[in-house]
Image (cartoon, rainbow, N blue to C red; front, top):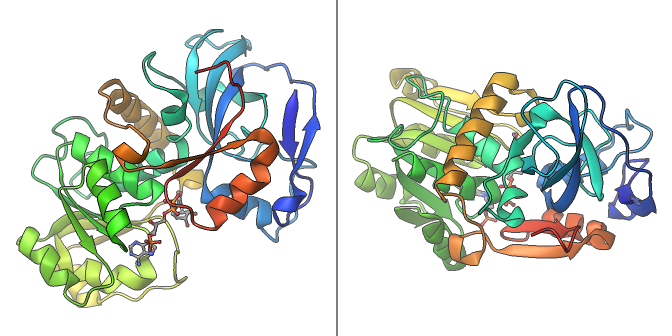
Amino acid sequence: MRSVIYSKPGPSSVLQLTEREPAAPGPDEVRVRVAVSGVNPTDWKARAGNRPLELDEVVPNQDGAGVIDAVGADVDDLQVGDRVWVFLAAHQRPTGTAQEFTVLPASRVVPLPDDIGFDVAASLGVPAMTAHRALTVHELGPAHLSPGSLDGRVVLVQGGAGAVGHAAIQLARWAGATVIATVSSDEKAALASAAGADHVLQYPDGALASKVRSIAPNGVDQIVEVALAQNAALDAEVLANHGSIAYYANNNGDEFTAPIMASFAKNARWQGVLLYTVGQEALAAAAHDISAALEAGALPVGEDAGLPLTWFGLEDTAAAHDAVEAGVTGKVLIRIADDLR
Ligand SMILES: NC(=O)c1ccc[n+]([C@@H]2O[C@H](COP(=O)([O-])OP(=O)(O)OC[C@H]3O[C@@H](n4cnc5c(N)ncnc54)[C@H](OP(=O)(O)O)[C@@H]3O)[C@@H](O)[C@H]2O)c1
């Protein structure tokens, strides 16, 4: 099979297209024939990192979708032929999705409804699971999302045209929240609106807090935050009592300061989110609820849905990584099997 590998960290030129024998799934594992691989910032960051690899050889990319073609012992709920999406494929394993077949623990493989395309499915893992976690850390719950579960809540999505931001808008709207999104341009405002945001505000803007306040006079209940170093003061200012600020990235700054009194006066919850360490319970909750949202058709992708797709071939995986690193708007996908749709 064709497989993209790297054996030392570095620029995208360390990625090599090579031939490898597909592995057989062990107990509690399945083998997936990959249709589409999804690329996220974490994939190029892991590849480019200064840390020595813990594994001799790594296949990159955490996210993907395809069809199960072999099942190991003790796997009861997945079968050969099932269409699936996968998450954390390359986490502490060499088995990312930039290859024609990958072997994964069954716990990281989720059935895909028949009418949902592999483009949607390969866009879910990192972005949608991170967004799910960010939306389920409020002090008063809910721990699960479903229609109506966020009724009456106001959610502020900072960076509404990003991949995580897009998924956060979609999931929050599906769950019944009123969504305010921030973006940096008219083009991105159109995308956040297409994703379903009720209100879209542009940053930077000295009047942003008062604009949020005029939409949500009682404050914002939940904030999904991509750039805490820049936005912490604004977040604290617009937060409602008992509100949560879920931050998942260090875009544009590695440290933040926050007003202590305003934070405790509002019983604010500053909640870090990292998918790799969030734990099995949160991952399972996300997979469950994302499946329900998929069934409801609530997570479309593409320009009309607010997430433009940029496609590459497997042989151009390095260019796909470079596109994500350069900050292309929307989702970068790699088509691996032309006959799987
Ligand atoms: N903790 C985790 O588990 C986890 C999971 C997923 C992603 N991440 C990290 O999260 C980051 C975003 O990932 P992604 O896939 O969503 O990337 P993306 O698609 O490139 O989106 C990043 C977004 O952040 C926006 N942004 C930057 N500064 C902002 C600010 N001050 N206010 C509001 N928005 C701002 C950008 O908009 P403009 O360019 O218009 O400013 C862009 O839309 C990456 O650093 C990634 O590594 C972490």
